[in-house]
Length: 245
Ligand code: PTJ
Image (cartoon, rainbow, N blue to C red; front, side, top):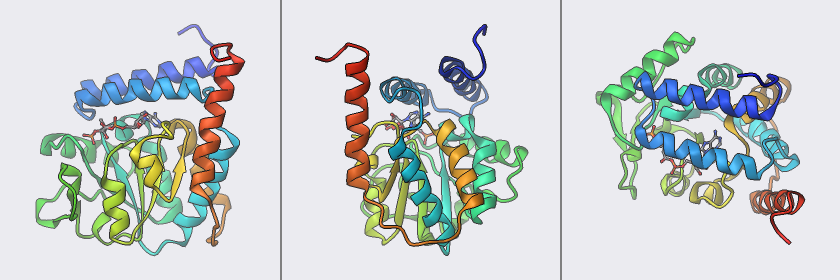
């Protein structure tokens, strides 16, 4: 690629390469390529940069993760391909557990994700031992299968890159949900307690550094306000580019 490394286009193309490699290595589901395309489109709409509202969400998420008794980072195929190192850094900074949780259920893919996370430095990866499986109620998708020592007993769960009804189910269990989702209108984004509307590759790095700098603290974060400011940001970007009157 003949583009400066700091240019958003370079970042976007390099993530695309990671997703394709992840697919070729058996980490990413075929459907994960489509989900990534949706993410790319939304990233373009948010201006391929971290907004002020996303930064505020990141700080609130850091405070929440650091205050948690039992935080868990849920990892799917796309997350494993895009930012395994950052997942591990975040787990270290917050003493969170890492759990593989897939929508397109596949035991072999789970094992490959576990192996790749361990290769990247993870000491323990939950969610791959059938003897530890428990089911979350009120959920039909395979995402209901969670680890008894991980998401099942977590008080705070980070759910990056998914849309669906799992956030609602986790909240019904009394858990706090933090989401990464470039689409502020997705069900996950709408139902989470804290939604970071940012590309996970940028947001995770900022979250790791916020967790290293912050202390456990109470937050009076307003997710509704954050989501509407993300939508306004998209409208303003469209106006700036002359696509909307
Ligand atoms: O590995 P599996 O089987 O668990 O499957 C993972 C995918 C991502 C395929 C699965 O969770 C899925 O289908 O997700 P959705 O419903 O497509 O939702 C993914 C959401 O993440 C969408 O709202 C995308 O806009 C958003 N998204 C995609 N890429 C990024 C992103 N958000 C932040 N950063 C990204 N890089």
